[in-house]
Length: 95
Image (tube, rainbow, N blue to C red; front, side, top):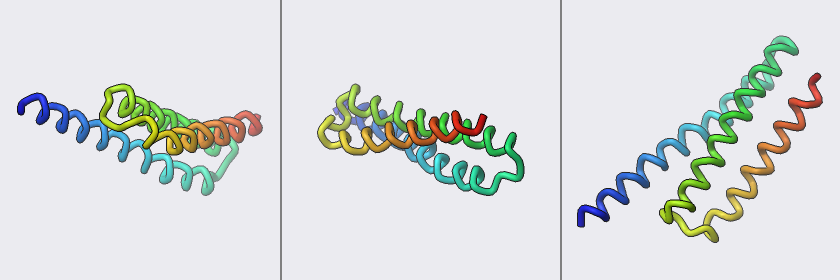
């Protein structure tokens, strides 16, 4: 029973981290859209990419730790990878 409780606790911790980083992607992207200068745009976009990468990390951890089956998160992981690619391309094109 203790193993199951520990497993649930780990899942909750990872879930909270994922929620935090994923919601941060949205809020930081909003800041990107409202940037007042090219430097601020680049800086905020970099933060957004970091948070998107962190979200992808937590999704991968959920799979690797066998908390969630890979087939259940496959599409979400794919979408997160695409978000990182699009944001990274946008950042590259700002220079």
